[in-house]
Image (cartoon, rainbow, N blue to C red; front, side):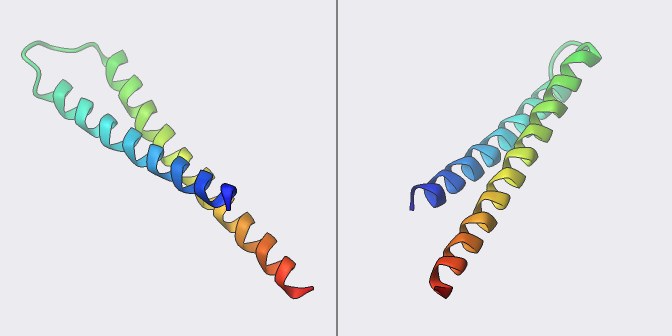
Length: 74
């Protein structure tokens, strides 16, 4: 039960990171002055970390499904 909740919390935080990263990327694009490329790299890294969190959450959900499936077989 707690592991499933943890998987959903991780997935939600991953979506939040992706959303904030896209928002900041748009903010940097439409900003009033030119922005150094290192800021774009940080934002792209943030978006990628959000996708990574989503992958971890999916893997955790699969492990929970396998564990409950094995538990129900006995």
